Length: 64
Image 1: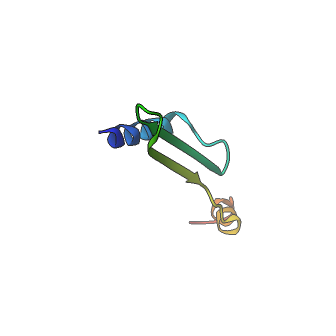
Image 2 (image 1 turned 90 degrees about the horizontal axis):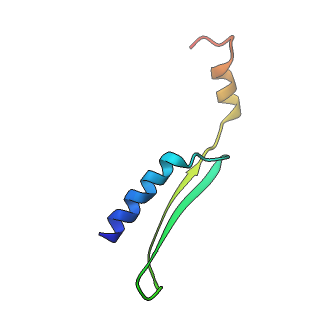
């Protein structure tokens, strides 16, 4: 149950936390009653842009 709730919360967080660059990581850490690590879940958002292919597709002179 804790695993499902952590994943669900992480998915909800992605709706509100847009990356402020080309790399962004969201993480959740769940601890038990004693403070020990029970679960860690994360999502990584990474963008790699191919400048040559991107610029040729978006060029006003290109005909797709």
